[in-house]
Image: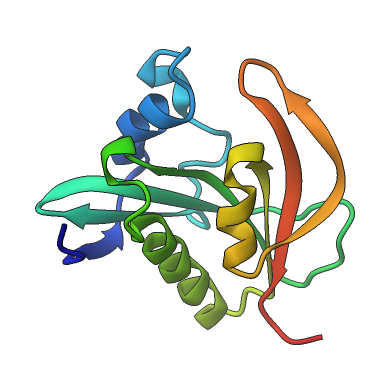
Length: 151
């Protein structure tokens, strides 16, 4: 399959079908909205392949209580359609968002990573923090983070 793609900013509404399908299939689409999704400081990115939205990432201006950062963002709602997983699309849309935030002065990104995504994030330079925890209906998670400015 070709890696030809386009990444662009998208709306909250555009993220919802893929969020529901990949991350929260137990919820109706309308209930997949996250707090802060529609704030002016929130960024949604979508990767389109053949005109179809196949991978998404959302970044919210949010600190984590365990970390000191000047301009932190939280990655939330990272998802790639199952049919397109393993082809590099998730890496491309996440890296695009990280580089965009770095250009805006963001110094720190964190997320609650699902167990099955640990290797994905680790490969992109994210580190683990704290103990494993369980999210109802979703499963085991661990906080992962990445400093965008060398310390």
